[in-house]
Image (cartoon, rainbow, N blue to C red):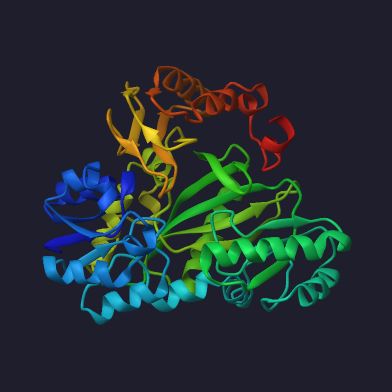
Length: 437
């Protein structure tokens, strides 16, 4: 087993990995920016090393500084968490060159699945259903318009190397295509330093269903059920739940088997997520594969009883999966919501909910300074109960207990969603927020 793991991240996911390592008897190294010298992950790790100023490009996105820190601190593996360098193929390659194990898939898989066009072509060759779209990426509006005309409107413009809802636009007519394309391209360039775009058919008000997969180096690939991520604003997830109320046992089995086939087609190893759109007629389409642990992984842990971070580490160390597909079953319902800061500032007081079936993943505390330099997510609130109705009610109670003072958050917004009669009844599709909020 690894002796020491460096966590190339910050915030709650860094804390989550540190705790898993501690339970496994593995020492940890935290990297931190000058703005994070008093951050919880910095304080919890066995060792910590500063890697630069607050600006991400000079710290958490600086591959040379992170790798130098890993070598200097004697780490034999790096866990990238999510965001930052977690899906950067070059970083994974450099880890290998430095004889440091990257806890994730190989650099070739990250590169292939990170490019939407290549990912789509890989899935098509494997017989996985995909959303109708262009075969090749495009770099100018005229070429994109030609592809859109061949597909038929409405279409979705996507950053080929993007994620997190950035560089995406829905276009319903030829007249609005060029403006939308250029705006999405500028956003993609700013977010991913790449202006390559991809065009596909826009599926109206689908459900966003993703399957958690695990694969080891010994040829074993399994799925751990699905997460329904349909409650979104501007293509960014707000709430995730497992299992999906939209799936029958038969459809769940079929989509799970398809997700496993997709992972095998990609040559995947470690934890990943296969994402689908499910239309109103229960037809599903592959849209992308996330080659990292997801923000919403706790809901899967709650319904399966498995620790995904520990399993990631075991897989990276060459061990076979700890369980088989037949040993995985979904118990009850789990729901996660994200509490985000609306503005930077100091948290002057915080009260976290608790009780049976309530989990809080966070790195904030009273006196914590929320920086404008990083993601606005403060707290992941997760609940688990015997069924969806009970879990929704438990989340309402937990949100009613939660208090964050000193800064403005989206806490009240989340409470409004969970008490909305349409959400309570469920399931909802991706048009829910636009229609009711």
